[in-house]
Image (cartoon, rainbow, N blue to C red):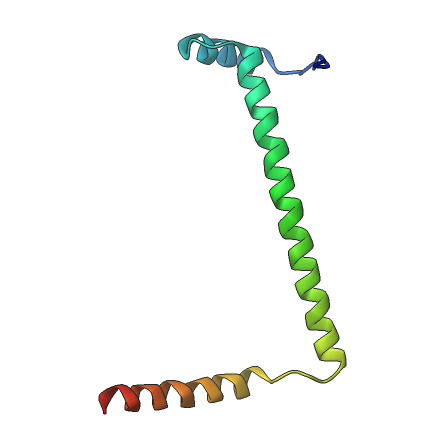
Length: 94
């Protein structure tokens, strides 16, 4: 059985009038528009939550690497990859 709930939204008068006009123009109902907006918001939060967990895990791994001394300075990494790019360029010319 579907549970129904009501949602009270406080809007200023102009925004409420503009929303009603937009809904009428779109030939839909205020309830349908709000239902879609709530569904979109809930889905976006799920995605944001998943990304936030991914990012937090990545940061934690990075901190563990730093604590263990398993890092390369940015200048050293740039130099290493510049050398790799140069080797790849030479190989492609051969």
